[in-house]
Image (cartoon, rainbow over all chains, first blue to last red; front, side):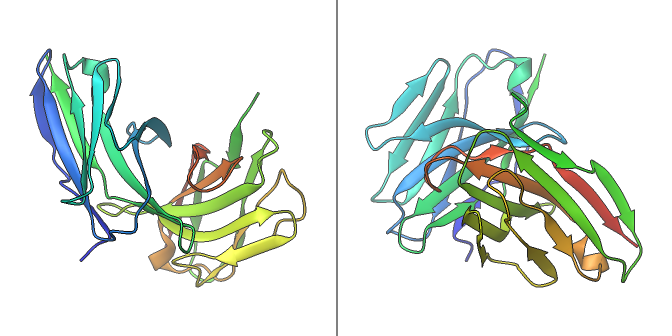
Amino acid sequence: RKEVEQDPGPFNVPEGATVAFNCTYSNSASQSFFWYRQDCRKEPKLLMSVYSSGNEDGRFTAQLNRASQYISLLIRDSKLSDSATYLCVVFKAAGNKLTFGGGTRVLVKP
Amino acid sequence: NAGVTQTPKFQVLKTGQSMTLQCAQDMNHEYMSWYRQDPGMGLRLIHYSVGAGITDQGEVPNGYNVSRSTTEDFPLRLLSAAPSQTSVYFCASTGAGWAETQYFGPGTRLLVL
């Protein structure tokens, strides 16, 4: 089983709609969680960190569920420019290990 | 402020050739790392460094060497290229540790024939 798993998608989303997707992690000792965004043929860039209490950044909301070992990302009022691959990243302090998921592709269509 | 730069952008090699992928950052970051990204897979750590003169192996180090003689530069050397090393390579840096924001370079697309 992969340490960090994501549905590869694509999630086809009408412009203006809401889309949500999850990322599961296998190691309960994982401590920090992040969502990165990667545009086609570009480098990943940090979208947001994920805090235990959940956090919001504009149209983006991230949640952490430690009991079920997953994090989620919700995008409201989707824009064409939200089309990208979203990478889930999990950090474990023991071993100083950062693990990337394979990414979830989101396509926002007019 | 250039951030993290990588050269070359694209490279085609023949099996057995060697080459060096360059990475430089101008943010005075101590932590630097090299990843490879293959279709359907997450970024996998090749080698990393926590400061000048200090390097260590990541998840997939075989066939690659690194050195860190300065804070700014972290080159990745392919010793004898193999088709399995066809991939996109990203260099990243971070200032305060692995749990902080990773700043990635634009990537090098490598094809080994």
